[in-house]
Length: 167
Length: 167
DNA sequence: CCGGAATGATTTGATTGTCGAAAGACCTTT
DNA sequence: AAAGGTCTTTCGACAATCAAATCATTCCGG
Image (cartoon, rainbow over all chains, first blue to last red):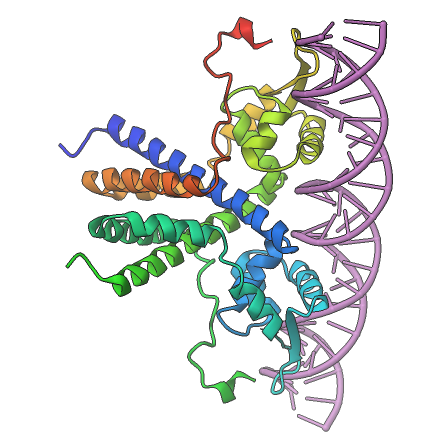
């Protein structure tokens, strides 16, 4: 009684279409924002990842699904603009720690991210229960999508180590 | 009691974090799938757009937020692999209609799209009311995001013309 | 302690994506 | 038929991206 097979598929289709629209809208917005900033989409992604704390090329690579070679090239460009800085690990000198410079932090901060701005504006217009529903649904969706691909998950593996242990 | 300013912002933050996770997961999934298929992410996007029916480079360009020059290059590569075909408009010979070949359709059909597969599987597990809620929420979100950027909308402007009018 | 396997990052070489500006082809209007 | 507009492509330049090879370092078995 909870709906026959037909109804399910139809709903699934509708949901998927909506999801695709969301993805396309944000993709376009991201590209446009990136270009306005003088960066590229990928560079922006890396910067945002770094905002969560210092990491290594390997972790970045795993976190955003690009090869290490690509990440190295991206960091080259970001470093050339003074937005990030490389620092060799001290206990393990194979590792390289990438960190935002103050300039990089400032750039990120000065960038409302379009998506973020639009979202917040519109989100604030919702009734309280709608907000709650949306958060719940989105988090549910995160779980659904991550179920299919195990990775894309743990980016900060060293987050709970004390600073002295990090290198 | 519908929540003060603090609660709102907190919820907004949570929602945005979830949204970002969704975007990242799908982005990574898309890249991986594209690579497995021997295509690129952008090429795949164009193919999927074409699955909704024949269009022109201009419409594709507007639909996915890339310049016409880029779209031309993408179509060049897709055509070289025999996945799409170009056809000049007959009434207006400036236009070029791009269409999937049978090979292109077959490729798309043989590709569960990972995202699509995962989503359908997980979606089917939800209770009926949860499905309904998710569709409603996602469509609401589409509206919210499109509010910020007018474009990214009408892709198929000729969908309701009869075939004979299409060229 | 030594030497090979493992690990993390970079380099190299090649293809593709991407843009802006200019050119080409075609339509429309006057 | 000339002028101006629209749609697509071409061109030149730079960035993204990968796989494979290389470099530097650590780790481990003996």
